[in-house]
Image (tube, one colour):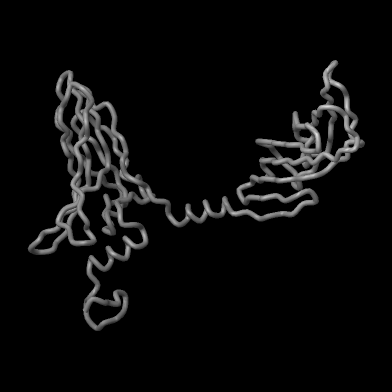
Length: 286
C-alpha cells in the first residue's frame, strides 16, 4: 500500500528510518541544518594537519546525526605546499549500503587543488536522501591554506532557530495599536514604538518672525503630542502643509517626553491659512 499510518499501533514493527526521516524533514526542512544545541560542532585548529570538531546535533535531509556530548571528532588536513594556496572542504558524508540498506554518517575532508592564484574549494556530492540516494555530503567548513599554514576555517552550515528562540522573536515583534488624540501608536512588546500624529494650527495662532530681509518667516510650535511617553527617541520626522509655501524644520523632543517641539518656515505671513502638521516618531517606551 502507498498509504501508511506511521505512529499508530499495527500489531507489528512497522516504523522505518524513512518514516522518521520524512517526518523530521517536514518539520525541520528538507536541506542540511545544524541545530542550536551543544557546541554546534565548533571547529578548532589543533595544528596545520588537524582540526577538531566538537559535539553537536545536525539534521541532514531529515536524518538526525550527532557528535555525542563531551566527545569530538578529529579530521586530518594534508600538508600545504610552499608558495601555494589551497582550499579544502570538511564534510559530513551520508552513505547507504545498497545491499543491506544500512545508513551511516562520517566526517571527511575533500582536498582542493593547489594553485599559486585564488584557490577554489571542491564541491561536495549532493544526493536526495528522501528519495533513496546512496550518498550525500553536508558541507561543514572550508579550510583555507596559505603555503604550509592553515589561514582560516570558515563555517558553512545553516543553524536553525529552536522553538524557544522563535517564540521569543515573535514575542519581541508583537505589538498593540493605541489610538491617541492626534493619531495612533504602534507599541511593540520589545520596548520600541512608532507613532504617527497629525494636527492643525491656524496661522493666526503662530507668531511669525522675519528671517533677515528675506521673504521667509518662521514660527515655533510646542507640545505637538504623539500619544506615548518616550524613554528614548531615535528619529523624529515632521512635515507641514497649507495653501502657501511652507515646510517644517528642527523637530525635537519636548521636555515632557510625549510631544514634539519644532518650527515652520513660510514664504509670507498669510494669517488666513490653516497649517497641517504631521509627525512620525520612533523610539523606546521602556
